[in-house]
Every structure is written in C-alpha cells, then in structure tokens.
Length: 625
Image 1: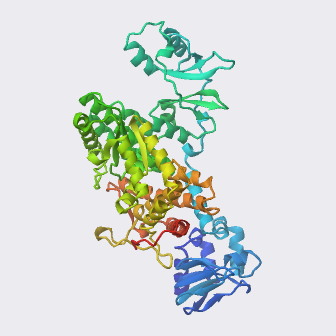
Image 2: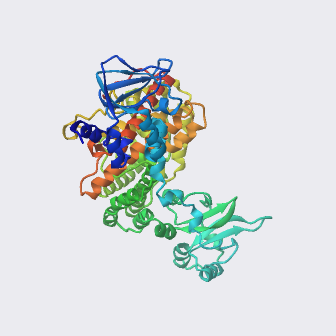
Image 3: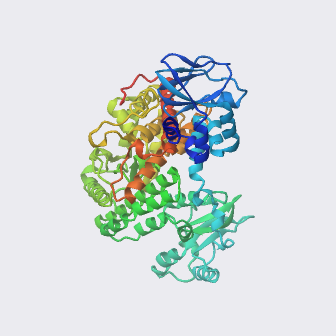
C-alpha cells in the first residue's frame, strides 16, 4: 500500500465509525478515497445539491448550517458530515462551509451505501444524531448489569409467611421456625380484608424479647416494627438495594397491587450482588468503636470498584456510596451518644451536598450540619452538641471523609443552630440573595436529615420549595451563579484543558461537568417547587412541568449520566492501579467512544446553560474558561 494511502487508513482507523470496521474493508475503502482542499470561508456543500460523498475532516474546521441559515454544528478533525443527504434522497440537507483551511477525505456514495447496508456499527453511527447517539451510549452502558434489569421478584423463593398481629411471641417464634424464615409479616385482620400492620424479625426476638425477658404470652404487637417500608413487585433489584441502604433496614416486603408477595432480606441481595455494598453497611452498624469503623472503611473502595466492574450506573453507585457515608455518620452519632449520654434536647443531623443528593463518590469531603430543637439553650446545651459534632467529624475524617475546607460542618457553631434559626437562614438567603447567600444556596439547598428528628429537615425542604419558586430575583441570581462553571469545550468543540500546575492538560469532570449540571438542574427544580434532592429525581419532577423545551430533560439526564460514569470509571481505574483517585482525566487516556460522547454531553451542558440564562434573565456571569 502506498504511503499516502497508509496515512489515510491510519487516520480513519482512529475515529468512529471507521475504527470498528474490519481491516480488509478499511484497506479496500481507502483506495476509493479522494482528497479535497477548501480555503477558509469557502462553500463545501450547498443545500439541495446532489450528495455524492461522505465527508471526513482530516484537518481544519467546518460549520454546518440548517437550511434557514442557522448554525447547526461546528466540526473538526475526525468528524463526518453529509451522511444525511446520502441516506435521504441523495440531496444535501445541511449546507457546510470551511471555517478555516480544511482538508477533506471524500468517501464515494457507493462505498458509503455498501458500508451502511452491511456494517451494523457503521449504520448505527451515521443514522443517529449527537444527542440520540449519547442516549444510545448511556443505555448501552447500563444494560449489562443484572442489578439494573432484574426484578425483585427474582429474589422471592417462597410465598409470604404471615400471622395475625394479635399473635403471641411464642407462637410467632414457632411459625418462623416452622417455615425457616428470619422475618414474619404481621397482618391486621380486624377489617373485611387483612392489611399489613408490621413486621418482626429474628433480631427483634433477640433484642426486644429475650434480652428484656418478656413472657412468651406477650403480644407480638408490643415489639413489632410498624410504618412498613415496602417495594413494588415491578421494581428492580438495584432499587430495593438503594431503599434498604437509605433506610438501614434488613427486610423489605414486596407488594403487588397492595397485596404482599413475599419478603426479601439483606442476605438475598448480598448473595445476588457481588458488590456486597449492603454487607458493608451491615458491617458498619456492628462496630463497637471508631477503630472498628476505620477497619470497615477500607472495604469501601473495594465495593466501589466492584460496582463499577459490574456496570452499575452512576445513580446506583452514587446512591450506594451516599448510603455508606450516611451509615458511617449514623453509627458515629450512636457511638457519640453512648459516650456523652442522651442528647439534652432533640436534634437532627443533616447531610449536605453530594451525600444529600445521593451522588457521593470516593473522592469526597464531609458537608454536614445540626438542626436543634427550639428549646435549645446555648449556655446549657451547646457543650454537648459541640462535643458530639467533633466526635462525629473526627470519626468521619479517620474513615476517609476529609474535613470540609470551607468549614461547612456541624463543628462550626454557625451550622449548629435551632430550627427557627435555620428557617431564618433560608428565608434570608432567598429574600436577600447576596454573594455569600448564593454560595450557601449551592451547598445548603441539597439537604437530607439522616439521624434524629428528621422532621426538622422536612420542614426546611418545604420552606425552600415554597419560597424559592416565588422569588424570580433569587432564581435569576442563582441561575447566574450556576453559569460560573462552564463546560470544557472550545470554539471547535475541542476540549479546553485545565492549566493548574500538576493538573495541566486535564479535564476536571466534576468542576466542569457534573457540578455545573447539578447546579442548573437545582435551579429548575427550585423553580418548579420540587423537594427532590437527587439530580435524576429533580429531572423527573421538572419533566412533569412545561419548564423546559421538549427533549431537554432527557438530554440533561443523559449528559449527567455519561459524564458521571466516565468520572467514576476514571476513579475506579486509579484505585485498581494503586493510585489516588481524582476527578481529572487526560483526553488521550479516554477511548474514542468516550471522547466523542463527552463532547456531546458537554454540548448539552452548554446548551442547557444558554437556556438557563434565557429562562431566568440571568445577567452574564464570570466564566472560568
């Protein structure tokens, strides 16, 4: 093969969709390629002219337009254009001009037609546009995980074992032993139709009955757990896993049309899922001191890597890691209360940021606060809560959750206040959105009560949801704040690299990707009055309104998922290589598939930010580019 043809072949082989072609086909294809040169500003394709070639950009940059003259896309090295005309009537549908001096490889229509008809990967690529391609990429990533596709009914091995809620302890124990189950569903049979009343487990019999030496004739209702958390039979196993993680429960009734179908236990999921994330959580709550928790914390990264290798999606991984983080907090709070004694007044420990959003990864610090009962008296009570906050914060740091550099922790007196003070904080931040208030909004408007009297946090969520959507000034300034972090795309859809010392020539996928996405999603969620905290849950709430143009919610969801999963895999690869995980990736370390779809995702973020400015009349913000 001539040197010129070898150069063409090698270049094509580096880019989609040619990188998936068999060697023999690629060797034949390059012999048919013609090379064309266009000076900057010259027309390459005119609307309506005959489509004769698929155009591949060897070097330079091209602008593609809609027939109205509106800019449709900017393309650069390795991109293709002209395929839609070849597929739809042999007429150019999107005119194109050279933005700078450009070299084009022209692939004849006959060669394009043969590849389109015979090579599935080639056809899939040319038939779909960027955002549809990104959606396909996202869907492809999640399909191989059994946890994502298997229903909870797969874990049900027997019919529901139940008993009347009036049964006595001895009889309940006999029924559980006879059927070989670790949990018994208790039914209220006083009405025309039995309804679920509560549940009792082996652990309940040990800790609530035997330990207290209760008589065998004691009604089981005295020790059963009421307020059952259940899951629908159509739900997936990963949803059951997240529900158990979030609520720290070991048994979950499965229902169909309100009727119990069975109970799945922690052990069922642990056996099914190799990640054993629930096992890590269970192990956390068995620890008797901080040293034990430190030992367990070493399993967290292994669990993270296993989930990535099992192809779990970003929502599942983020929720699982947040569940583990919450469990460390909850156990430390319980140990702190054992050490310091019972709290003098009720309180709620509040998670903030990524833990509250269920989007936590392994590179994270601690953001938390305390909401105290309004009966709190600083002189009488604050020494206790200060000591408890320090015990928890130090324990978290020992378990790998570093101290917050901005001091957003319950150890800071400002963030350890009565409910009434917290209400005044949020009211002031919304009514008087100054610079500090807007910064606080990005942190404290993702909040979740994880221990104690969590009704306090629910009250704060309600206050925020009601007030924020009524304040257009607050939303406009919050939107402007959300525009401070821009996606790392240059004029030609090339990546803009960080220039920050040791992180030179990298892309920070958090600062320039997932963080600005969560910022703009938060603004829209507040505007529609949603109390959801997770970005994907917020998008579902936004979708129920007419707030965004058609298709925008799906595009934002796909962009968030793809950027997040690339970030997650980068961290997992670092852990497996014995390196410290971070958020900075080098484009040359990414596959062609990842680079192309990251560009698509960043373009969606860019478009989302433009709409954010338009929708809320946000004044121009300082760019980080």
